[in-house]
Image 1 (cartoon, rainbow, N blue to C red):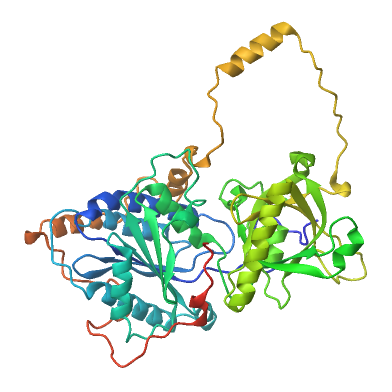
Image 2 (spheres, rainbow, N blue to C red):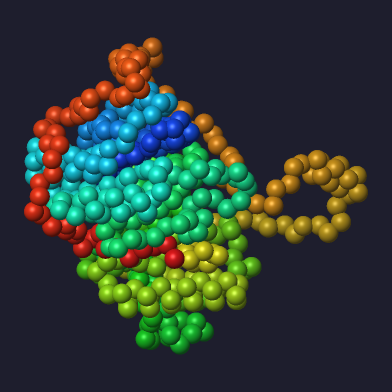
Length: 517
């Protein structure tokens, strides 16, 4: 029932996917904290880029640049395309590992501000040298400052230093404080689910503050959020609930309540990784494409993709064999174009729906829009989804089978009294197994990152052998000082003095409603 027929080489028609904005990462780590953070950060970046560079289909990340700020600001990596540049990204991470970890220096208060201004200047000059179509895509920049210093002090420092800087090209400026704590109990809730409990806040309307733990998993999950379709220009999906109840399907069109939602993937499809797809179209996760729900909801149109709730179901009455495909998450929208009252009311109704479904132990059956509306004279087919609540402020959406897709299967009844000998043998085997109360995916890994990294490296190839010799020369300098600030870029670096007389200005997109409550 997929609206298109494609081959394993990719979709035959243009895909609708919101590409993430260019990103500038500024690592602002003072000694001696860098010795504790360096290995975790470099491993997280290595793992993330091995995954981001391997995804089949349209690129989810466009441009990336990396700066390091210790006593001075230093451009470790100028803006490069992420896809197809894993070798260069890996060399950048290798140099990051070689930076000075011991010693002391006098921190310059202007270094962080100059790194932001220099990165912004590099971005502006980069888009002047690309094609017109690419320049239209790279309209704004997201800047992330990763710091070991108190986050609120860094925010104040940036607010004071950038008050006369033109930030119209900055879509979002975020400060991420790396705390000294580590993830001691991996069996507890995952960091992604605990993000709402972090000390995350929005100071003013321009600089966001967030904290993450100093461990590889927390940093890795933070970077993976860059793969999400996190655009806030418009809501992704409308969930329509009949206001008169669920008893009569015909009432589903009478005075529906509309919840405006944002749609996110719960997990990456394995078919998006090289060597895992079978080259044929699969309904749940075709190679190089998303499922019908995500693709339709990502289309740019005046009317959002709609899910019409038609029935309520008991949670115990839905067999797992009737659901298929990867799950997707619905959240209350953070579209900045909606006024605050509408955003607050929408979130309150969304919260009430999650709470009521959990209390009643109900699921919802929803009907999606036709796959190909108005196509020729034929009747358009629709898809159906089951909506499941969770203890967080989210709803889980999965496709559900319909009568046309069900195949005949025999279902013999289970005997109540199995043979005693077999029962004792099997029960003794089960008693020997280690029992876990829940399944924690953070405790299960398949060496995927190392496998993906190895696919980019040719046999007996050494990546940039000059990094080690250059790093050794840096560490051998007397006084523990870094080399003079250098920027390896193809465009002119920003002068060391800022341009006065320009007021701080942020685009409306930077005023997105926070998703963490």
